[in-house]
Image 1 (cartoon, rainbow, N blue to C red):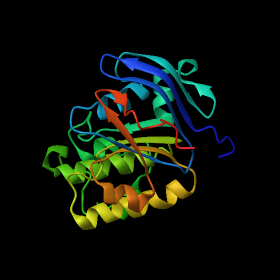
Image 2 (cartoon, helix red, strand yellow):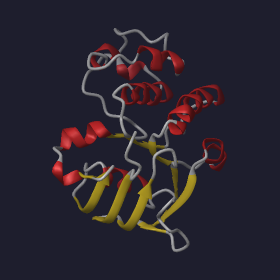
Image 3 (cartoon, one colour):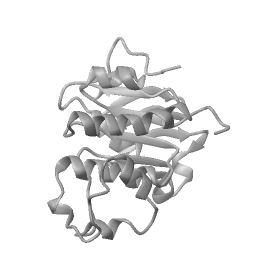
Length: 206
């Protein structure tokens, strides 16, 4: 990754969030923290342009508005706490990219292509969505409580997968309620309160 500008968010507003200035550098991830209903998910959705919003959002100097929505979401991938699925079976989602190694690393080798998505546990669905997202090689990754439904072993698998990617320059914002996880992954705390970055936060992890 040659451009170190990362993800720049300026004057981003929606019906719920009003954020003036956040910069997330490659390899300098942010833990987005705040109580339930504070706007964590809404901020991530606004960044990826899923909800109506206004503002200047750039990735490595490229304006979001200069890309089509699908192209922006290929570069900036958002994985919600409960991912959405367009097909009934696991195999319906495995055609676009080869996620085999990632799924194996996340302890999902036992899941069959013919298995209905609805039969997977919440934690299995979270890990499958993460594997599929990472297989698309995003420049920036927005994760909403990616390990909230996982046991310790599965959480360790997720963190072990993300850690070298962060070191290699992944741009990452992770909404989390787990301060120990943030510490393990070297995430810098950024608090959001009522849709705004908290008064003691700079909004810049430089």
